Image 1: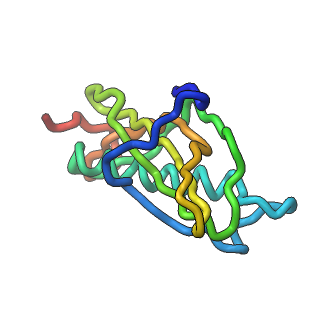
Image 2: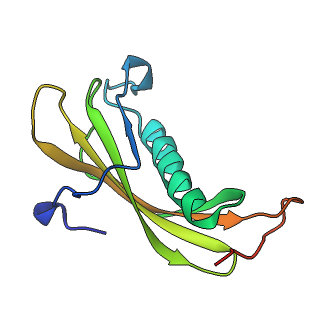
Length: 130
């Protein structure tokens, strides 16, 4: 995990970029954490598919941290990095940055590690191809 006081916006292209809408808010009017988790899962899965090249399923989320709120209309970018590749599983670090649509400043809003398992045609754990 990164120290949010020394955060640096990644220079690579995000794996996923979305703009949350009013339907994605919680009772307080901020973007619902469950929505953020699902978008992180999509971004992590995209990176895992790219590396694994076969069916995968999410089996865990570790070290999940929400640092700052996300607001309706923010441009939210999800950056991913492969953290570990095992025999049947792959762990993806997902970092979430948000930017107000009329400003240039980005802020680190969440981060976590998602673990996926590769599956064969019978939906059983399968060895990840090299």
